[in-house]
Length: 256
Ligand SMILES: [Zn+2]
Image 1 (cartoon, protein in one colour):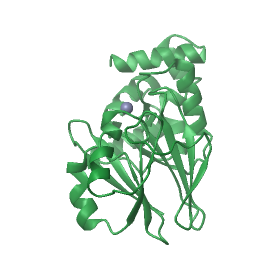
Image 2 (cartoon, helix red, strand yellow):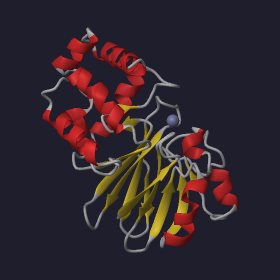
Image 3 (tube, helix red, strand yellow):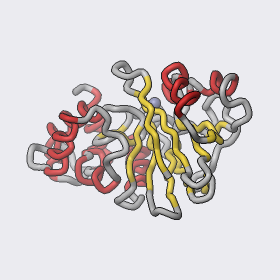
Image 4 (cartoon, helix red, strand yellow):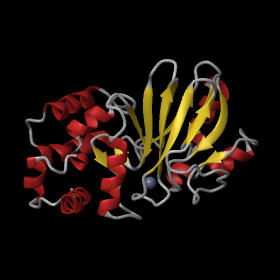
């Protein structure tokens, strides 16, 4: 399989749309194509694949806002796979439902309610090459997580726990390029001795795009939101019970 990341609304929202393709058949999912104007040139002229579904990680406008336009223009007969609140949704997979894409790619829908109640992450595995990737929307960011707009602290603990159970080599494709600012916050919490975080910081100095590079294994090392029992995290938050740590971390990040 291969994944093409398409930046949208760059420098104001730093959104990502993704084209996930099964190499053998060129069948593809178009994930979170929120701003058609920003990606239509690529889709019309450079994309050599066949889009078989529009897919949303959640209903927010900056992820699902392009569905209507794309259904009217480029992709008249494709289904919209998303949570029930997305505009023009035609199919909502259940938690852990597996959907086949082309010959070799198997995609597992993972319900991760918290940022929104309809948040779904999509774990893609290429059965032929062994590649693995997960599209996390606004649930998991590189060294961060989304705000809890429609959910609770325990729900985010559960959602991130679901993602951390994926194989360590799973590549993370997140909804926004927020890594640089996340790293600043994570350093303030994890300290300066976290080697994985220091490496991520170095990477950010020379790369504008960090999606599709780091893995679930990396997140376990450099993301404070999945390290609730890390002594540095407890020290920074001043609490130790995981739900309280999560609540405090989120409010610290919101005010950072
Ligand atoms: Zn969102």
